[in-house]
Length: 410
Image (cartoon, rainbow, N blue to C red; front, side, top):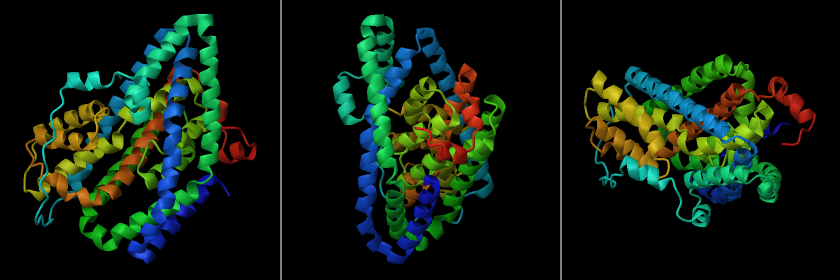
């Protein structure tokens, strides 16, 4: 049985177990927490090793610059489409109509952060502190600079470059060990989620859940399929099949970081070169938030519906611009998700109290957002690798069953 089959079984059984056990499903949560911790312990050294190796092996620094520009442009374009899709779906469904607000929790306004400060926050003062705190964007900046310096050092930097190559290989092997426990971790986390929320809580908020789900589904099937099919010249079905594994892990854990080792595995199965995947995936982990941006659009319309506010076309255009910029700009800021939604609501004059309305089901919505982000992360590697001309199309066209049958080391 393939791993993603086992994960899917864990998802279904976990959901059923949670409905049966109810609040007692919380006893299973420590199993899922341990699984997430094991995945997270891999992420930081894996990002550091793969990104340093990718940049240092590029040879020409201009190639790294070109790779970065193509990656960021792809992120901005897909995020823009995500916000537009979110607005269209929300305007059709009107998820906030008929919602009884009752008493809403008071939301304190976070301290504003200027664009200049956002950029400054990307650069670490102490790289060891950034590694210890798991500040991914700061680790990425340090890794790019360090990898570029290694490349410029030439032969004298070879021993250090070889160390990072060895470290990345070791971390891949460690991730293989942890990945084998995915079905059990997924089962425990989904059981806890369904046991905590249950159908009684979910049904009243069904319209916004449905709107976010439909928006994310359209974005995955339409936007990414067009990008993969037209730009990368890859069968979208093959892409979706090979990314389903990290997507299911992201769905159950609500963490793109936890799914990072699975995404690296999927990139190998898709034929993406290590040079590209080692650059695009760490970057995507922090600034590619299509699902989150889409949710901001739906959330803004939801709050407008709930408070009886009619959004004009100009206001909705403002939402698009704000959500796209905020999805990148808040990446390095603690509590970035709250600040992002705050920025979007403030940009069109909606009350911040609206944040509290969906807070109770944020975990459910986060499952859809994270899943979308992971599909976007993997599509970026595939598209950029194709543009760079180093996509292994033989590997891309090989069915997943054949890859596992030949036991290709990943």
